[in-house]
Image 1 (tube, rainbow, N blue to C red):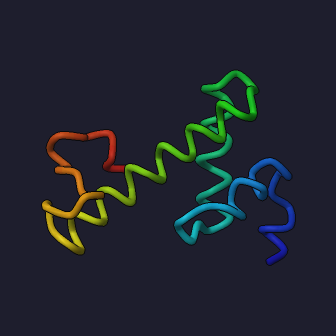
Image 2 (cartoon, rainbow, N blue to C red):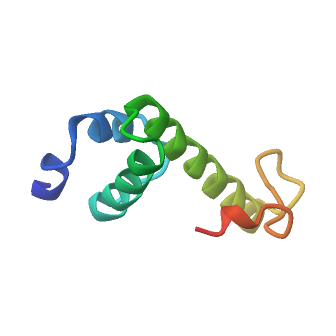
Length: 83
């Protein structure tokens, strides 16, 4: 919990509404990369995290419920989903 408490406030705010159970270290790594790519724009970085999470959910949906599930994507069609 101490690791979570040390995360940036904006990241903790995003994690409070995340669909996946992100670990503090993996969330921080992704956050730092997204913030760099967004040139410090917090909202843009949060949007990056949301897109990554959506791709992970879609990938996992295909594995769990099959490619015909509404949330599923074919990993071959979306190589960026392989994070």
